[in-house]
Image (spheres, rainbow, N blue to C red):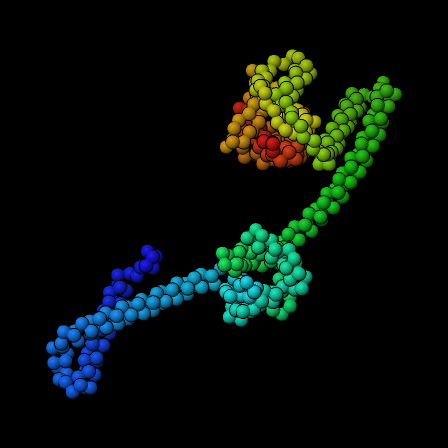
Length: 435
């Protein structure tokens, strides 16, 4: 007997006692019948048998005992197997997936209750012996016979989607998995994916609506900025004529008002340009190439120093920092980050700006660090909102579009950007790129 088939000690003892009981009863019954037939004394026949009778009886009783033990062993094994099958059946019925086993003729030899309910039946007993054709329409049956079952017998399995048919004829989408057993029976596991399909369709519909809305917004933004630029140009031209032709007739208040108009026009022009830049960032195509970020940062730092040669800023750029991305867009991002660092360290006597890289759980994160104005961490969520400026930054020039531009560029590269800072002690901005 195999190790897995050895019965527990309690079952072995039970078989032994029952077998001995049957043997004793058989011996007594045999002795009583022989004594009655031969006219002998029953007491002597039972307790004083002859040597020949003892040998014959012992042989018969041993054979009988072995037979009884074998039968009892089979009965106990069957009972234990039935208990195991009941547990397995309960476990299979508890599954949310429909499970069926098909024989070589394509008939269901096993079906759990989930499978039955999935197809609109009350019990798995209604499906036992039914062909798998009952679960699908004609088109799917043809697809199974021509495509899916040949793949199952070739590769041993198949997974994909199909269209099921319920008992009353309604159809529904299925996720289905087939696996071939050693005896060529096929295990079939199915799941209703109606809710998932509906959700995917809703997402696709929302995506189409969002795309259409974005197109409308882009058209509106372009039209708005174009019209605003026309008005700004007309206003600037009028102010220029006023300055050229009527400068002598303007008093101090008049000249001040002309300056206010000129500053306002310039601010509006900058905002229009920034809005157009954001619009182009959304529409432009990403052209990936190997970009030398260290060389790019050094070039930007040199341009900033040339623009204000009177400032003394210590730039520390880590060497050999490279990434895959759009060189034009990445340059815009670095110009904004380094430009902010340059701008917000203006009042610091010993200015330090650093560009480098750190390792965050195996992923490269580039950073720009400065020892300038900084910010409160409670305001960190406001940093990347377009045209929004923190209270302590309003004394510096700008439109509040720089970090929003950086975020758009980094997101288009599949990365993230975030900032850390402390008011009066500087800030550091990190960004990652999908390589």
